[in-house]
Image (tube, rainbow, N blue to C red):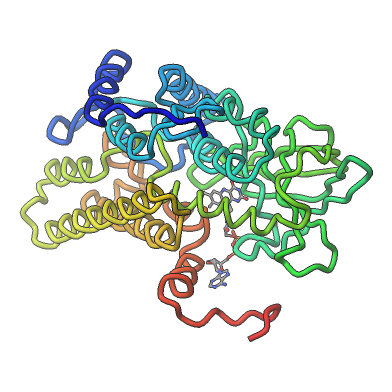
Length: 412
Ligand SMILES: Cc1cc2nc3c(=O)[nH]c(=O)nc-3n(C[C@H](O)[C@H](O)[C@H](O)COP(=O)(O)OP(=O)(O)OC[C@H]3O[C@@H](n4cnc5c(N)ncnc54)[C@H](O)[C@@H]3O)c2cc1C
């Protein structure tokens, strides 16, 4: 990695602040929120039509491009792959600052590509793959989706059955993936395929980068209960990719997945990039609107949410410190992810107790039914990136050192 002399952090942030102020409006702060003013959406997964979804993805990509061209789109990335080569602390400080501005709201498809797949290629790709993809991915000119899950392989990725068979200098892929977020926007897909017929799981799989426009790839969107279609089924029917599309060694797919899942947990715990709604601010506004701010149980609910939010941010600081010190994402990512999803659930429950039936019946009143998108979305957040139960297993085994869960394919 090329050496870069970092300016003092404060100086760097002053410049970043000036750039942000020149390019995007400030975000209303908590005390400035007003009932009935602006968008009332509080969602994780939007009920967008395909056209609205694409327009949103394009808006997020355009913002990423603008940042990239100004030197803020890949702050802690190596210079040779389009980054600014600065320490992670600079990137984290910029992202914190950026959230004070009215940047586009989160797009799961873009976050996955930028925060999970691009770091995976940086960590595991060949030099040629890094040169081919990384700059484009970080500038959001290219998008990559993640193709691990299958109809019979979710938590247990050892059951992946999509098969890649070697044919000279090529591999032929057949099978089906599911829940592939953003596949309809992706140029490439990072797919784990079974390559070792009877090999143990640690040697049975190989990772590939599959062009999504390759002959034999079919993407079919799935409709969610929130109304939109972020996820897809992806079918591979005799898809041919060159051996140069392989990520890592033949049989190295299990290790590759574990690396990627570390990035995925870290991204999920941080909130997935982009600007999320100020949930506590919106809840305060709601409590004020409905005259509930003096009720002890409601006040207790707020105190609980506030305290958990602080704990969540300390957990994130801990993960960030570990990364800054050159470590890889560890089991604390599981604790953070669990904390985020529980927090979202608690926020949804507080919203429900404040609003009552209007949270499930669209009366047209600003700031009421809008919460239903969050409430219907958090079960998805509990599953994606590893379910709550799987996070608990990771915490038990890797953080607390408890005995491993018994598994029939592993000696006791
Ligand atoms: C929002 C979202 C985005 C997603 N995006 C992607 C994507 O881009 N790419 C991709 O490949 N996949 C994606 N997924 C799929 C996701 O990774 C899987 O849904 C998840 O791993 C769970 O797998 P499953 O749905 O097959 O459930 P299963 O694994 O069948 O689990 C069913 C239930 O059993 C529990 N369970 C399973 N095993 C254990 C165990 N050992 N101990 C205790 N409990 C257990 C689970 O916690 C769950 O409650 C996404 C999912 C969601 C919801």
